[in-house]
Length: 206
Image (cartoon, rainbow, N blue to C red; front, top):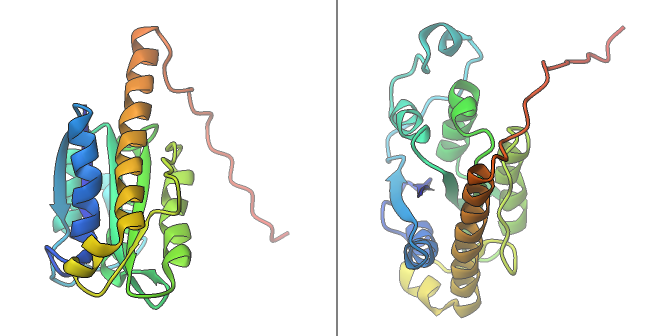
């Protein structure tokens, strides 16, 4: 089993990375393979709703979004991490997830997802709520911890002093591993993800 941890920070090995590494250690200790995927520091275009992905099978903007989409089918779970910018996820990760879930959401459906946020002081819970909405619109079980998945600090060294935050990351990794093993046991017992009904879309303009 494998979990991909997505680093949505423009800094490859900053505070967000430090938090993800703590969750990764717990996953590895439980026998789960991992990969930390950095979205990069280049500008990421937002989704234009062009529908090109439905025709091409991938997003028409060929960047790190398509790179992760190719890996998504082989992963069993996902953790998306972001720094807090103006009480929200980073603009780059927001654009990244908009396009990833729009073009490759089917590859992640039914697989556990979790979010991690890193902030200096405030805005963490708002960013955390934002990221979790991607999972709940895509039939993905949301993995929780003992507290909201957040760490505090301006530098990786600060984060390493946030003992509660680091413990929250380890608990998250343990809970993700536990849920993955439960799902695997269910599959072996013949329990599969529920078949999805054809989508009904209701407009409220009459």
